[in-house]
Length: 486
Image 1: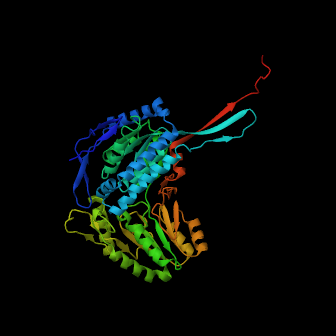
Image 2: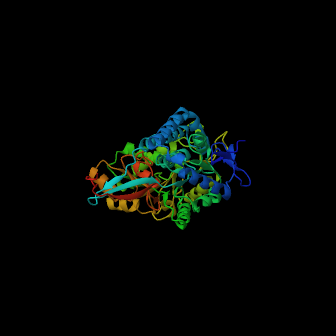
Image 3: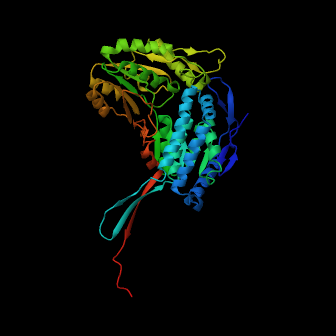
């Protein structure tokens, strides 16, 4: 059985923690690999190595366009090994192979996009007065920590690491204990390509190893994707050392369907927005807000589509794979049992046993109706393939429902009327709004992040480069030269 090593200061090492942690294929229950917790001393070693590497002349001498070229090479390598990496992601996370392939291509595109941006991170000049040249320069922040979630391990590692390396930082990645395989594959490529200490990979349970990183006094930035409670703890820890954070947290994102919506597109969009990665997506369209006049017909068609969905192991490449682990499975099964007892389930709601895959964590994609808008099922992130329906009669009611949670990550607006679409988009409190489509976080170039408890800062696009730079103002006084000197 492979025990995944860490990369610290250019060396492959095992975690010093006691015991082994299983990495399990959620489709089959098979143990794919194992890992160990990093110790506090090992985390200290990694931070020390990152600081030394970041401040070294060796790293300073790597030109911006050379950093970009390196990231382009990685993008090409990923595409050359796309099927192998897709299988790793599929087996590690349980998602259908088609979705895993999309994740691998997205990772390649992140490295490509930020590789192209590496030598285009421009400063500015500010006119002050005659005799002063004032320049604003953007410098790397230094040692950056990237705490990656389990649901999109390769994509989310790529999107922050690519931006951080493009801007000249040293990177420490803490992968999720459930899904470290593709991060390890990335690490193997980076090893030997960069000065030791510029890219390092730490493993272990988040609750044990994460605080060693987030409380460290010699890091300069933390990027964290995960739950709101953990995000709060990360932010508190960072505050002790005045370390900036970029947080991408939860969501309870709505698809708002008006009576004049393009119905076939809306139906497909609503379905895909909640079943992608078995609903284990921060930006999942977990709420359907439907105009009352069309609710009956729309929901009837929606139920038909849900009941036609195929659930199975990731490698079978059906519509939806399993939940990630037993913890997720038990949590969501309990919620669905409560929903059934209250009469809310109109489709799905059951666990599934698949012949030959009895140890997998399968549930039916589920639709809930009749839930009060203020109830937990309509307010809290379930993180599974569970869609809650709410009804509205006016535009203002739709907007109030859309904004009626603690989250504000993504929203979909479905209407053929441009006035309606623009009006709603302007008033919905969400970091991304899609009109007559739903991108589940959208393209590589689109800034991504949330309002309210959905997070702080933005990832993706050019704006994410600012997460990993510091602004310095340099004012240079010059005088009239003496042109008459002998």
